[in-house]
Amino acid sequence: MIVVTYKSHNLENTVFKPTHYGFFFFAVWFFSALRLVPRTPIHTLLCLRFFSDKKLKHLCSLSIFSTMVDCISSLPDSILCDILSSLPTKEVVATSVLSKRWYLLWRSVPSFDFDYDGDHFDYDKDKEACSHFLQSVDSFLLRRDRDEPIHRFRLKSNSLFDHTVSINKWIRAAVSGSGRVQHLALCCDWNVVMPSVVFSCKTVVVLKLKLVTLEDISFVDLPFPKILHLNSVRLSEGLNLSLLLSGCPNLEDLKVEGLIYETDVQNKEKFISLPKLVSATIHENSLPLEVVKDVEVLFLVLDMDWVTPLRYV
Image (cartoon, rainbow, N blue to C red; front, side, top):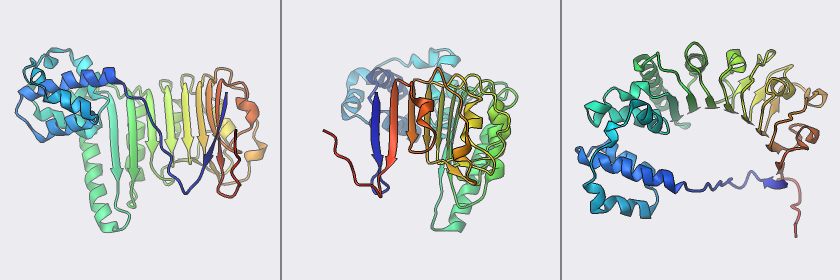
């Protein structure tokens, strides 16, 4: 099946995802237990985060939930940490105020999930806020249990203030030593150059890169990634996409949009086949269609700003 979509810079892409009500009902039970502890800002924050559906919010207001026994705290640490790993790290750390049971639990959560969006109209204000953000992240990494691995690393940072040194340090900490990161997702800016150690990480299963620069990918050994998403990634002089794909033989989901080449090497690339590829989303001219011709689902994204739209019946 081939799906052709049109991308226009004048329209915003909207993605609708199905609601997993099983998870939400478990969240209802989970957070209703927190009603037995004194109400705090973090309690309200967590409830609002999960109960976006009005019906679910109504369920939380029923008396049955207000009388539910707080049995969530009796669950093993491993289960609680797995639940908390789905939250942003800032909110994970904030759960330490709930009770003594939760005071140090955040230190063992196997996730790193930070999001910073700076002020692009006031450099001084952005610099101050970004400095506070850097201190918060460094404090988290310093205080968390270093014997516990980081399985999920997600970082979104958009700032006028240059903090690429810190970002590279955090990435190296995630993929080196006891990091054992499995899910790596980055959205930064082109000043951030991906450390070469990322492309030889033996544990990565999901790799999503957006608005970063690739310089040293002469050696790529990623045997386990099943998902690779590249969005607006800049390839330095002499690099090409085929070098990266050749080191990912087990890809099942590939997404390539808006690659930026510093030199004209795109037409000289020699791609290998990806026999396990099931789904692909590619921007026009990002790679030859021969590479993805055997996939089950193909999304071909066309830039239609200067092309007359076609009408399909």
